Image (cartoon, rainbow, N blue to C red; front, side, top):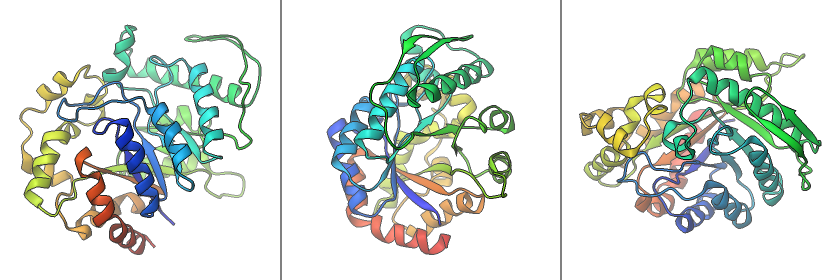
Length: 328
């Protein structure tokens, strides 16, 4: 059975609105909620970037049922992995075991702000691997002393360790990343419905009896609106950066850079890749490739912070019913 999630998109809403929307998303039937962890929005038109961990702490207190994820945190530059381990352990306690730590190798947009430069993707993945090893030891309650290639930890111990271990999900974009992280992670995060990548993950994660171990989590933007023209305009204004793809988007340093890189993207091009308007069947068909590729969980992003209440009140329940019926 596929789980369907709601995205707390910190780039387009302030902290109080995000908590309000998280409560509503749970009430309207979403299975889980993922929260982006950015220092800056991609485009100035989005207009927000509150601290994800503070928001998630409030959401954990305000909700009861939904799973919660960071989607995703980079534990190598803006945060030291020891700090991420402490944050994750605390979140797991606050959420009564509902939290999954989603990790990735980061984007220049968010990580350059601490003045440490921007390494190559190979180096970032090496840093991420070492960071996960540190986080694993700390959230297990061990006293950790670490001297690695990238990080140092001196006599660190977490004093509040959750009874339910923190699951770790890692964003992967290809076979090399799977080879590096499958043995360290519990779950996979992937940015597109690539069946070959998902099959490679499942093959790497099979346990002795041949059963699949872990989950594969994806995310897809939609621009629901009763007025299709308004939906297309909003998607173009706030989400045209999406067309660049991960390899481009990971390296751009500022919203001005994203604006320049996407200045020739036309509204009709955005609408061809993101379902826009009131047609729920179109959204279902856009999500279908994810479960057909082997994803177990798919989170939806509703574009436009000002539209969250409207989609949750008017469209969430029939959309979730249609998605669940189609994915059975």
